Length: 67
Image (cartoon, rainbow, N blue to C red; front, side, top):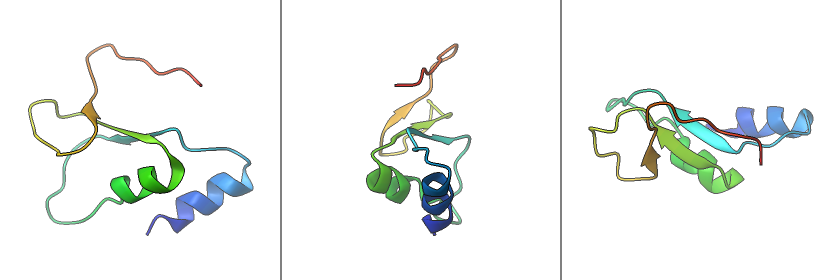
């Protein structure tokens, strides 16, 4: 399921540092956990009021910088 992302990033000689989930879906698997495990990326999600059970919620005004 995540192979398309891993392959595209490798071809572009880039890396995945963050996985951002904009909302939850209970009816399918998004692949976020698998992608993060494969790439070492951290997962961030938009719903601080919901318990995702992994990683951390995005805070208002939060910004990311290239490592």
